[in-house]
Length: 450
Picture (cartoon, rainbow, N blue to C red):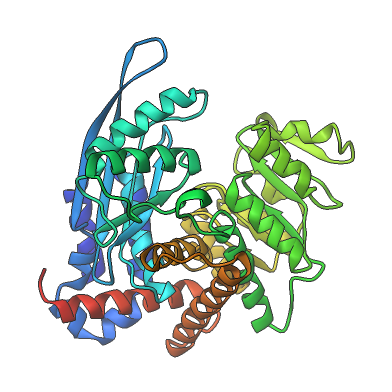
């Protein structure tokens, strides 16, 4: 039995029924085989055993009162995974699907993603199984205040700095920050993704999507190609998808799809960004409303999706950008993409591609940008927001965008050079995992057994 297999079996025993977490760990550890087999130092220091166990796991109840005066109870989480490189940094997700397995997989991925940026931040993740959809502002405020009544004990600008993820936007961040300030009496950069009125950073909302498009650009340029004229399949219709689409247009590409929980939108002429923003950022409406001003577009409802995949990946396109949620692109989808001539896949979401689909893309040797590298733009600009807060400065949108572009270039170069070092220049999954691992592992060794 191999060292890696032993570690995974032990993890399954100590953290039962956490399938998403196992998937994330197995994907990373398997790609670390070349370095673990050639360097006994990491095994001597039990780095793998220490890396897969969070430094701290916090679970708590969140009681709140709805508009009818009824008491509701949700479950809250904060997983502080690794602080070898800096304070814990990672998002808060409010969604009914949130559980310990999902939060741990996200936190584990965050450790390597943050390490790849080269910035001084550790990895963590948190959230609650609360659904903001359909709730009034008052209900969301009361939930956020109750959530922060426990969270404030564990976070701080040099300890743990959460931000927003699915279900947590500027409104939720505002309510949580207000409660933190009330409880502590301190006005400090303890949360990122704040309003521009009180400490937020320009380009933060756009950062993950912009970074995803930049990463695709760097992958194609390395092959002597470009984004110009490429038909792009984008899934999702939240911030990541919208601003991936926006930057793709700026770089000369043509995004032709997006999707939400109701279905997939296909517009061969190119998604109208103004209409999409109006639907999702202003009106909070479903994508099928796009058809009224754009009758040439097609909407595919979820009920018509193939049994073995997602409609968005069955549309012919040159590039794919999964930007919605985990495991949204499976093996059958990968087969369709490859048969339709897709030459690159860039992950905008966290672990949106199943492992068997990743294997197909790697075997085909098309460009594949793993999420821990390609979607690191959001956490990068969150750290830039922390820097602005600490120095009491505000940078322009263009300045933040330039810094983001430079960070994404550094991430790509680091992953690419590491892949070449280990004899697999086409394999950015291996390159990103090893590059992130070495930075965290070497810091852990230097800091002792803590």
